[in-house]
Amino acid sequence: MAILNKKDLACYIINKYQNEYNKEISPIKLQKSLYFLFAMWGGNVANAKFESKEDTEDDEKYEAYDTYLFDACFEAWRYGPVDKEVYKWFKNNELDCDTNVDIFSDSKISYIEDVKQYINELLDKIFKISDFGLVDITHSDDCWKNAIKTENKIISNEDIIKDYIVK
Image 1 (tube, rainbow, N blue to C red):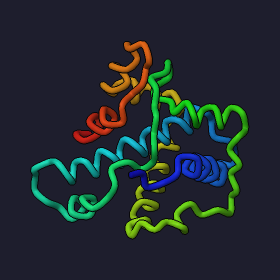
Image 2 (cartoon, rainbow, N blue to C red):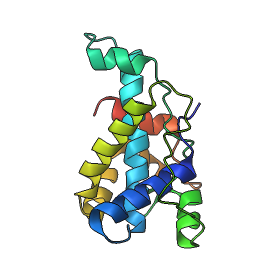
Image 3 (cartoon, one colour):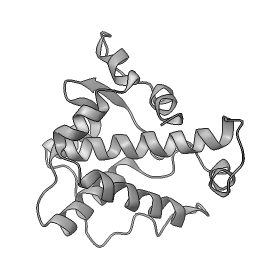
Image 4 (cartoon, rainbow, N blue to C red):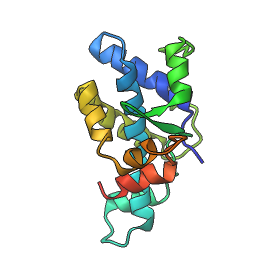
């Protein structure tokens, strides 16, 4: 089960970037933000659930969380992973991003404040990296390298998460 709606999360990222940098986010920055949020969240949750290591407070916290931050469908494109649906929405100006909407307020998930904090902290780091710096990072991921060689170029969500369990 996914925690957030993909379209709402894309709008959240777009609005946050606009508010912090006073300019529009690039398609690459949006796509890589979504990818890293999905991958790192899933990796942390999977790590807490499945790895046998010393328990920490963070591990115990993540054990109860859903692994999928949103319903992702990434494909391996030239400049890294891309969620084609979000790409089309963004390219065709189909994202109606109301800046007054709080995507976290209606959630029935008890740990939504942890999700919000995680997203904000990670976006702050992602936004500081150049677009092609982000591309370079994704090009080192095994899930992208393996999918780019295939005919359909689909990157499985499980492969993405596996890459980030150890990172």
